[in-house]
Length: 250
Ligand SMILES: [Zn+2]
Image (cartoon, rainbow, N blue to C red; front, side):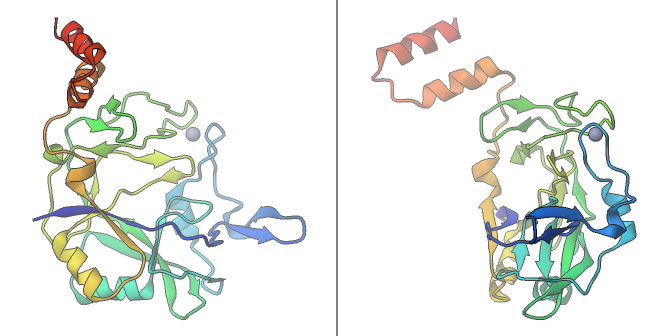
């Protein structure tokens, strides 16, 4: 069974959940219901649970050309359409909850897709972009001194360390992934769910092979090993590369 990271393709839309765009002076104004929510004095993040407790104005209308949007402009929630939610409910897809957050111009509600199921992930996490190895549970790596939350942790776990759920469950790894605005859910799903979404003709779903980004072989234990592995992938015609590998192997 193949597994995929599930996200939405980039869509150029103005979708501000917490703010209103003031066309007069082009500023952003926080919507009154959210003004009382505590924000960390260090990193400026909102408390997501409080945001959900306050709830959203379901009369606000947004333009969304596709059925899934990974990041609205002022948070890292994943927004989906009623079509997306219905496809999940109709097919008994589990692991996520849908919280109404607005109205779609084409009709129907928009929902925040909230992760309920978390897949245990005990193995190191690799920053896929630069090859740095991080640990799960994350040491004080860019940790906010005021609230203790990781300020910015963009990690993808290795496939071999991830305990996969059943094929109808959309899940996220149990590691805390956070970006500038707050919680960032890394949803992943099975090929079965992918097929269901494709049959439902949901628009804008991006499926990235779990194996491509997260190889199933164990990650190198440290940066030196990572460097050696990277060098060994290069063509050996260059004597400097061969010398470097020899030096590292000593
Ligand atoms: Zn903070």
